[in-house]
Amino acid sequence: MTWLITGGAGYIGAHVARVMAGAGEDVVVLDDVSSGVPQRLPADMPLVKGSSLDGDLLRRVFAEYGVTGVVHLAARKQVGESVEQPLRYYRENVGGLTTLLDAVAEAGIKRFVFSSSAAVYGNPPDAELVGEDAPCVPVSPYGETKLAGEWLVRAAGRAHGIGTVCLRYFNVAGAAAPELADTGVFNVIPMVFDRLRRDESPRIFGNTHPTPDGTCVRDYVHVSDLAEAHLAAARKLAEGVEGDLTVNIGRGQGVSVRELITVIGEVSGDTRPALVEPARAGDSPRAVADARLAAAELGWTARRGVREMVESAWAGWCLHHPDARRG
Image 1 (cartoon, helix red, strand yellow):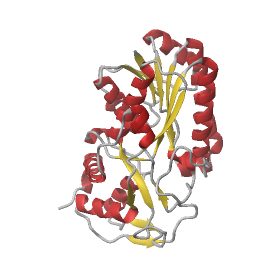
Image 2 (image 1 turned 135 degrees about the vertical axis):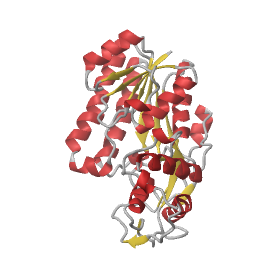
Image 3 (image 1 turned 60 degrees about the horizontal axis):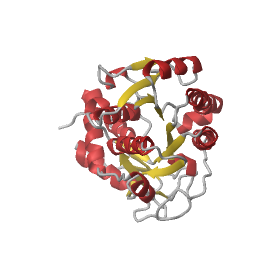
Image 4 (image 1 turned 120 degrees about the horizontal axis):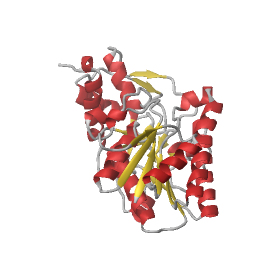
């Protein structure tokens, strides 16, 4: 089989591409390199520079490389930006997916893995774990595009006989190697790193939530575990499984913001106390995945812990920001 990975030069995409290729899958990457970094990929891995909005390019790539399955990660993904630019998010996330699925159906490709997000749940109900049957009420245009993307993937799968898997990621962190680390400052771990680098205290938004220490609790999953989940999904589809499957990808274990900042302090050597600021409107006190369906259907479970995520993310941060090193 040959898998096309869209967005494969991005932070998550490069991990997926490397894991799948390392497991013996033939891989070709499509990335517009607007945020992707080609150097993240092995030198011998085919990289086509372009967008999933370009149907003609997709058809040429499918034909030239004999693509038999697609892993679709290419998307804009910043919640705040999506509020400011909803038209751009719908155009690129939903429009790009529509163009891609149209080309997939035309080419007779029968396997499709979709990168979704726990953002489809919005503020999940007050429950110990969030299952795939929880209500989907996204609170941002980004989350809306991911939910609309799931609907579209399933509908196209049913109409054209395409086996589909939608993976709802929870909070992704860490790196398989320093050079593959997340270079953006949009997620909580790099945001704390950036505060420390600027000699500022980490921030906690609210400490009176109904959680053990009053701070929000989240599920963090190592990006290497996430990449292995994509491989598991691809291999399930390669077995000829029909229909659609939607699963959470997380550890099923909650970590509070205060606990996470403590680990970051231990790893970085900067243990200054965090500043507590008012809670943000709409923040859910707890969002932790029920990942049992992924284990049952894909044979996948997360293997790496939070400290490993922080240590690997810190090594990558220091590679890209040498002035961050302390002591």
